[in-house]
Image (cartoon, rainbow, N blue to C red; front, side, top):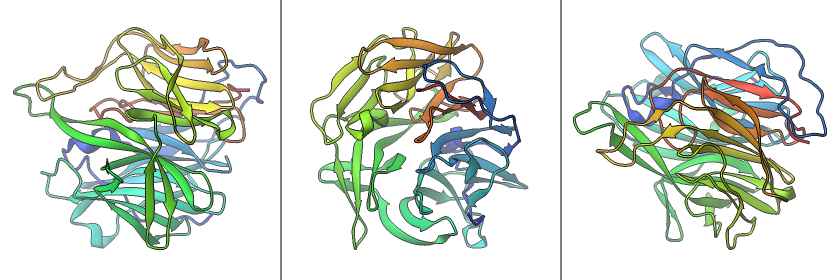
Amino acid sequence: MQAASGAATSSRWHRSAVFVLLVGCSHGEPFAAPDPTTDVLGPGSDVRLTYNVEQDYWPAWTADGRGILYSFVNLKPGREHRCIGLIPATGGTRIWQLCDDRGIEADSVSSFTAYALDAGGRLLYTEATAADDGQALSPDRTTLWLADTAKPFVRRELVTLPAFAGTTPIEWLVDLEWTGTSTFTVLDQDLAIYSHCRFCGFVDTAFYGIAVLRGTLTATGVSFEPIAGTTGATSYTFAENGASIVFTLRNDRRLYKVSATGGTRVVVATGIGPVGGQLLGVSCRGVNCIVASDPVTLSDDVFGTFPSADSGPRELHGISLETGSVLTIRSDTAGLFATPRISPVRGDVVVQVGGAFGHIQTFTSSGSDLHLYPGVVP
């Protein structure tokens, strides 16, 4: 795969809340080979994949399971370039990256909010941009692109947001996943800017789930269709060999399931994590799922509670869709667990450890890294 550098020239929108969580400069490091996959749901070993001074976040497996895409920040004098990186499935040196640091972008900042790479090297990605004036609090333009990893800026514009899927508004896209040669799914969210408190100078970006969308590439761009039953989803995953979609909701410690074609949602597990916490991501393989739960307080309005990671355990749970059983497989008190992703070809799980609140809310916080837990899921 050919290396590319283009850019995610961001800088927290330079003081902007939209990118508070997107701060991260990463350097891949070699590590020992992972444990072989087991046939029992268990904690596995802990392999640190990235090393940084700020944040690496939002991991996503490539369709063939050979690599892990993620977002990071490439710090350069006077600027923070937000990028997409790709590391091998077993970790090591970054083998490809996309950073929009071209000279023509010197007057703007940007970030990549969603990305998916198929086995043929086709890259779907969403790029949000704003003027680099230190004042922008939300993107001026968010675009869904279709490109190739070898030539990421020889690309086709599919849609520029805001847009609509019927009567459903589309403003912010995360968690892209190819489902066929011309089809994909993506999580549609609403973006809102809030002050941390009545007289605070700090602002924060909250993301409110709208629905999981089914996208289809067309001759003129793309068409979208909301998947019935997924309204309000904050994270989602396919399960049961693609027959169902499992998802989480904001301020809700239950796990939900709906047919992959849409329908009535049902509760498949309850009481996940400590009372008052948030579910910061879900991923399933067959009937087994991994869910991250964290003691996080969110801000929901301009005079709301200061968003924070509270004291208490950060946990990864193994959940059976057949029985609804909830098993805590990892628990810690330092650093959040967020956006777990199970490999499409193995039982390995990649997780963001530390940093901000998954796809629910941004927050100025300590750095984060990606960790791999090999052989966790049968």
